[in-house]
Amino acid sequence: MIRIYYAGYDAIHTADFVYDVPEGHNTWLLILTRTPAQFWVEGEMKEYPANCAVVFQPHQKILYRACADSYGNDWIHFDSDEIHLKESKLLHGVPFPMPDPEYFHQLFQLLTAEHFFSCAYRELSMDYLFRIIINKLIEASHSTNNTPHYQNLLNLRKAIYNNPGHPWAVPAMAEHVHLSSGYLQAIYKSTFGISCMDDVIQCRIRLAKEKLLHSPHRISEIAAICGYMNIEHFSRQFRQITGYAPREYQKLMASDS
Figure (spheres, rainbow, N blue to C red):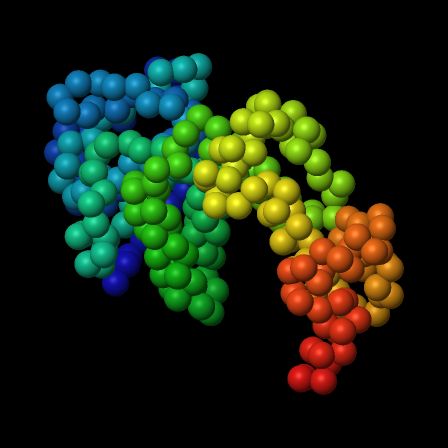
C-alpha cells in the first residue's frame, strides 16, 4: 500500500538553498532534480547533474544544496510497504540519472494533480501513477543507457514514432542530434536494437495498417500520409514486412472482423 503525504513539481529555490535534515524524515522522500545540485553521499558533498533521481529512506540523513544560480526539483513524501520497493537494489540517498526525465517529470505532474483534487478515483489513480514511478526508478537504476547521447537518441525516436510520415533521412537525423551519420547509425542500433531507418519503416507500416483498417482514405492517400511519395515503393515495403499487398491486407483483415 502507498500513501502520499506531500507532492510537488517545479519547485524553484535561490542559489543559497540548502536542505539539511540530519535525522531524516519519518517518511520516504523521492526527488527528481531539475538543475545540478550537491548531495551528501558517502560522508562528503558531491555534485550531480540535473535530471537525477534520489530516494531517501525514513530516518536517513538528508543534505543537499544548490550549486548553480538556482535549484529546482520535483518531490514526493510517501509511505509504502511495497516489497518490490524495499527489496529493490536502489541505492538510497545516492542520485542516479533518469534516462527520460521529461516523461518522469510528467508523472510527477499527474500525481500531484491527483493528490490535490478530490476525484472519484483519486486513490486508485495515485496508486497506479506511483507504481509507474517506482518501476521507472528501478529501471533507471539498472539502466546501461545513461550515455551522453541517450537522451538525444530517445527524443529522436519519440519524434519518429510521433510523426512517421515526416521525410526522415539519416543525414538530417544525424544533424538533429549533432552526430555524424555513421556514428548515429551505429549507436542507434546498439541502443534500440534496430537501425534508425528500419525504425522509421516499421513505424510507417504500423501507421499504414491502422489507416487501411480504420480510415476512409484511398491507398495512394495512405501512402502519402505515411511518408511515401511513390505508391509502388509503399506497396513493396508493405509486402516485405507484412507478406501482403496493401489492398490484400485490407481485404483479409476486413473478412476476419
